[in-house]
Length: 507
Image 1 (cartoon, rainbow, N blue to C red):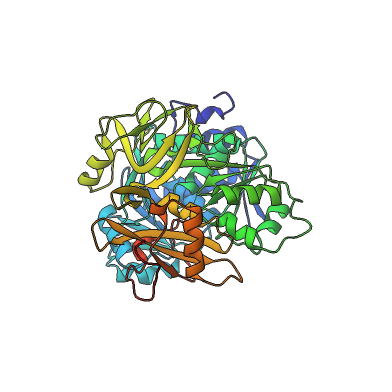
Image 2: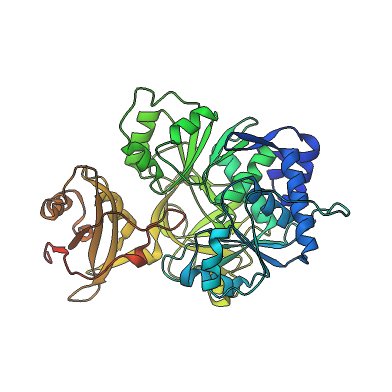
């Protein structure tokens, strides 16, 4: 682990505020953020964060007080987050466009005492029942209050954030994230991306998910630059990469497919990017992306509850999620919870090599916490496989496991096989009650540009290329999939009625 920046090495005994203060002393003139062409130095960011912390204290915010943010991307957002950390408050970030029942649920769980929000977020907050103090943030920076400089809180196991996970099967759960977990997540990011001083990262990730703060802390410790952008944009992606000398790319979900959909250009390989890393890339997409753009990919696996990255595919082999990061162990458990030895399949279970790297739990949800954490281990709810060399593959969610005629079927395996068809852009499958016990498989497809939805022909192709138990009975086409902010398909929003579905028959 000597290649990791010093502050990002186990046992991760520092804090976000302490890291900011240290780097501001060591390299105050170094550029840390680039926003709309403007460069912000580490020293300027630290000064803005100290001003934010003083402003929060002046507003009566003390250690442990939950502070809500619903802010657009930019330096003021970053300074506000770091100011919350310096003040020792509990950061509760939500998407600036959050609304409805999920927003009301998050407010009920976290009970923030102050909201720092974009003006456009206020109507949704009021509609969700917010009655506390709100302050609009317009990206204009903080005005320092006079008084002594605030020292960063020293406790690495202090609760620093409540990050709400994407609720694909129910309401979002508020993950308690500690200072130590934030630094470990940044270390995983540095390891996966081979972060070196001077690297540039395009920061399209929202700050209300772990991907945002882990990139920020990694860049601080690793002396890298972050080019902030409000959201992922395929149309200006490569122009931004070239203009800002971006050397490392982070991807999620279908982002690589979106970039591949663009018409090939003569300059597809004329860019400064040395490596891309992320999760959710199919093997065929990896091969196509690497062949077209000349960028090697590193697939990772992880979850917020276990300090983000758990495994990294350092060798870049398509179809695998690699091996565990040095500070975590991974096991595969059977239905009884016991770890399986050697090559095996089972539920992915994370065991830390040191204390403090697993979430203390879900805020206000002891039942879900008890299911997640058992005997010092974290049960992810994901299925995986391990080969004789100790390399892992991701097989999907345990909740995506179907049972057809007595045989367990992984939704991920079915979806991956269907995506190999040249006309299919993406697939999602769910189980629907069968006429005689267990499930029949209902698949939803988005088609590639110019391809027609021909379910009879697709079903015939599936029978030739997939195990019999994996071939869907029912077929539907959709224009697009609704996704979580982390780009996972919202299967709970799929219409599982069979009206209008093609039925290939029970054979």
